[in-house]
Length: 320
Image (cartoon, rainbow, N blue to C red; front, side):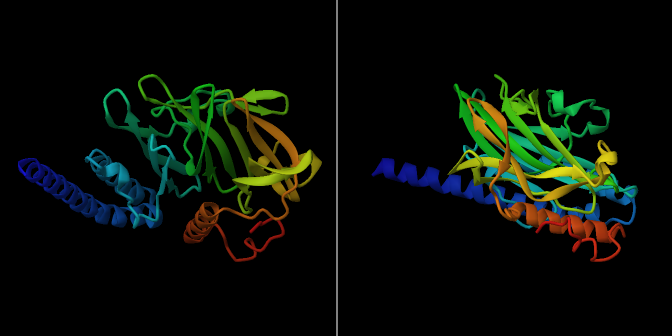
């Protein structure tokens, strides 16, 4: 009987503690919600920057609270929240759009440390402007290629775990980007971005970056589709093939557009993402995450008068 009473007491204390943590997190979330809108719709870069500084401090405060890993932050529609299927880590990140049309990215990675038996917190510092040849670089949280993540793909090979990340980058008024990155962890559970696992056009890359016109949409998602080598469907990263509007514009990525109903892919095999051309995927469409993010991007563009009318959305290159 005494054992039962002790167990009941400990359980009640645990529930009470968890409840208090949730109350604290909810209070912070309410403040973050207001600041998030200021980051998105602020009248000037200074207004957005000031709101973002406060947002960063509050989010860091929230994420070091015990049990915060499972707190959803559902009301924060201005940020991306992604959790790996094995609960190894969670990424929370967002963007700040500047008056000149460029973007800066921010975020945190919560990582479970098997050595310390707790979640560690790593701020992500956007150094995109100073990273040369990002497709070939191995990066860390404080030297991060800024992007907005919308999908985690989990794979294992030879005892190693790979977390492939699909992302978007608004870049500037002329072009935008879709990115395939990969996240691994070193022996101290510190995040490492980029790995030589992408086999593309007879070369090996640590991440793949697609750049294209700012007014159109490129589909990049993880799905099951047919390849030209057979009717059997395989899980793959599938994407629109991009081409310049004219051969003379090759290399000028602001003039690259998705080809109509022509799709390529990466298929994971033996620890590598191998490029495969001509996937049989008629009108693959966008994932729910992509669609939600695209709609948010359009709202941002309208707020800054970058999209002048709805004709842009209905252009022949805009894939729904």
